[in-house]
Length: 108
Image (cartoon, rainbow, N blue to C red; front, top):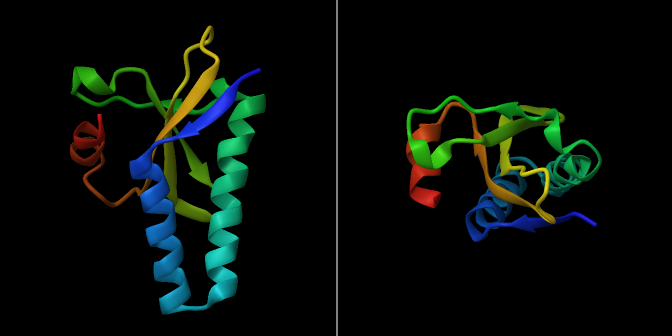
């Protein structure tokens, strides 16, 4: 059975965004965010190949994929999928307006 492995960087980003929503809006939005990220990540267990393959210049990011977080269309879950692997690592969760390649290269 395939399992999800959430990196420390991704977990930190999820909590940081939830805290932002909690402070800027309310607990309801923060909970909706956490639920949406959880659903996006868990959807990969059924359809791991559904994510779009990233086209970054850095060779260390080759094969990285992304999906949007439902209800938060500017946020993306970045992950790796190897068909014979027993795990799907969630590498990062980021807002699309950030310097994605730079941040993801640091995380690798």
